[in-house]
Length: 114
Image 1: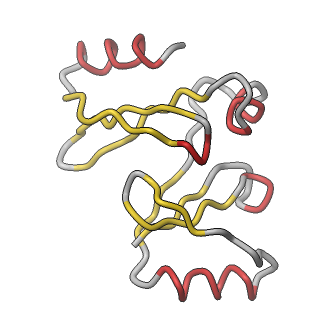
Image 2: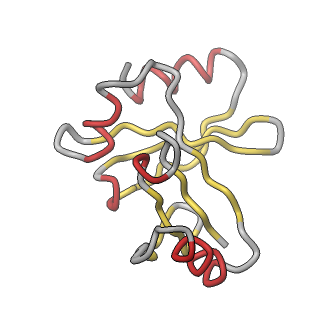
């Protein structure tokens, strides 16, 4: 489905669409949806993005995860100690973030942010 279709479904279900989000590091656009004081981000990648390639082989309910960490620098060190060196910080939708690709995060995108 497309991002606009998903937005309509969530809106019709009583959830509040929030801000639009550019995700240039994933070559994607997104929309924040407020759910019970929390938020999810619906994402639609461009056809040539790494996320698009991954999603072609995933069920429609595929999701990545964003986790807040107390210290992003410490998280980066822990990742490096566990075979995930050279993780590059970027400005994600929640601020300074590290994006761990599915091949290193059990099959799902993992974003760590402060």
